[in-house]
Amino acid sequence: MERSATVISYGAHADAIVTTARRSADAPSSDQVLVAFIKDDYSLEPLLEWDTLGMRGTCSAGFKLKASGDKDQILPDPYEKIHVQTMTPIAHLTWASVWTGIAAAAVERAQSFIRHAARQANGQLPPGAAHFTKANAALRTLRGLVASLLRQYERVSQDEPALASLDFQTMVNLTKIEASELAVATVMSAFRACGLSGYRNDSEFAIGRHLRDVLSSPIMINNDRILANIAPVALMSAVPNSLSN
Image (cartoon, rainbow, N blue to C red; front, top):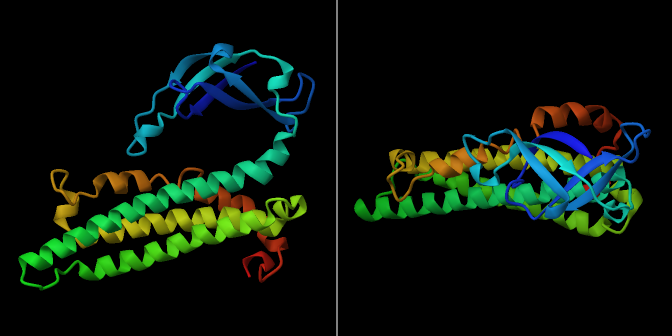
């Protein structure tokens, strides 16, 4: 198979690549499967570089992929099933956990700054203390969102109809949106708590990297696209959502 991919995360460094493909040459484009290729099976031709504001470590450059293998490397379940039952919930849980970790690191740095500033001022809290309180509260909410989705996924992980239900899929996508937006807000509050010390790259309280990285969360997969896609589904879902109880 050959395909041009605008993004293959860690592609140049990976030992294997899993990609989608049409089931056969005459299959419709919607009939997709997943294929696993090990390094000896494929070659990569660079197409696009990865020079971004943040998340540089993912090295998500674009490549032309040329690969060949045996039919045993094709996963037996259709991609549509894997996408709904595994890929989407696991991806959103993993991403949300990463964003939560970034937010937690920023809040921890803000806490260190507030304590340092208070010691320097004989116990007087700096003006940014209120923003630290706000950041800390947002982080608790963010952690609760991720934990709630994880509990729900564990509860229905062996129930295929429940995994494919409109209610569960809507909840998974909305959690991604809420977590990404809240992660950005949390880091911004921590950033404001530190003030200029958070803005300076040469400060022990610098939050520039946290902010750069977390700003990728609403656009990775774009929240606007998710909202547009689930709007018709949300209209058909029951309110309130029984899975959220």
